[in-house]
Image (cartoon, rainbow over all chains, first blue to last red; front, side):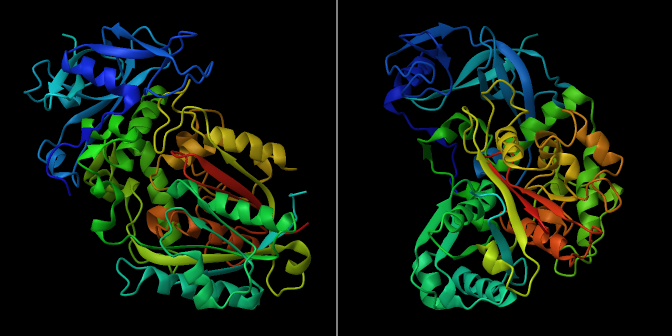
Length: 143
Length: 383
């Protein structure tokens, strides 16, 4: 099994998303023709089939739609961190955009009070730098 | 054109074990021969094959070993737990349309060894859809299923106590099935509540077994089926289903993530069928994880959204309940073979040979994985 965190590979249709993440900017892909938002990013608009797209910068804030607390057996990188929290975040301003991300404290260092974590909690975004090309978004509870 | 034109006429299975000292090809050959013997059909009559894209035993090796006739059709269905009924339905379509006469569908898998867990082979750089989940620590199928279940429990005010009834019911069925891996291992409520968590809120007993084995079935046209010795399990209706935003194991991005592709499959299946949910005598719902059973009960319209766990807690799926479910113990307690054990149990119920036989069972539903693009078949015992 791989020892380190698996990292997202960059494809042509999500290159700008990841570039923005390295600048601590969160962006959502929209169709350049009909403005339909889509996540995860992809080549074509499922509404009007245009391949032209733009990226809109958003706050990344949202609500905790659900979460899990994985326990071993896990990949070694995550097993060392278990118990940790992965959430599905319902992004503010969009009807159907839900994004998977780690739920942590704002500095991404201290343990969460998992027993008191609540679905529906307001969360804000931050970024975990992996290397010069990749920062992975994570979310923290608004205090 | 399709309805009631074909039937499952043979079933075969190897031993089930945590570790069988044999190859997947060897196990596949044994299961297929047993299924053909059960049907009373000679291998040289087989001219169609159906399997899983995840199946590692190729059609030509199967054919060379079994001594099949000239093959006229073969196909593979994708998405692991979503595949069994799709592979069966595709072979049945080939036979119903006259392209082929006798088909075999099989699954052979050595999944008992922990090193065979698919997630454990995660690459260090991920280019496919999993790039949006695995780097954040949502690594295993159980984590993806657990995410949905916590929300379901939150919306409908359910607890782990309520969920326990799924695993406990299936274990009781397994305790009556001598071929089930958990045949001699009772499971108590306390065992369940004290079990270690795998992906909170799901614990060890909400997960399928890790096992080795092979299962095969034989399908032919109804006119031939009626000349054979076994009671045919007539394939009455079949559909696949995939909603627009479904990924491989997550359907988080549609209007309602609690309504998976099962709703697509179910709607078309009932449209193809002369029957309604209330007519079904016994059901086999795909159960890699326990949440899939209540979610499937709702998707296939056996009860309103949000009520399934309450019904299950009240005995709905138990031996004396309104709809006995996964009556051989299912993937949680019999064997995990991507749901092919559910298919053969559905056939046994129509033959009257289940270890937890539903009296006078005439209509038997089999579904596949609620968390993936999937399929279902509706089988009837007579016509």
